Amino acid sequence: MTCAPISYKRPRFPPEIIAHVVWLYHRFSLSLREVEEMLLERGVTLSYETIRQWGTKFGPAYTR
Image (cartoon, rainbow, N blue to C red; front, side, top):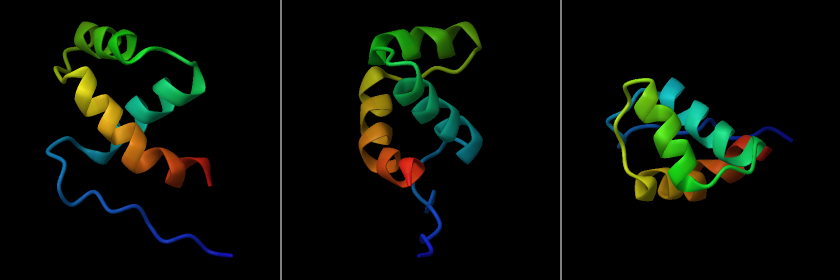
């Protein structure tokens, strides 16, 4: 069974950042705000709501 590629057409962040954020959130069971703070320390500013939306949208595709 092959999976369709993940489409990153709408987000303004590069796919590498999105993939890293979703990976952090799901892999280490961090809260949305903890992921937000970790990214802020690295100079990436986004809200916890954006992280939640990415987790909902891209999370299932990454787990496959």
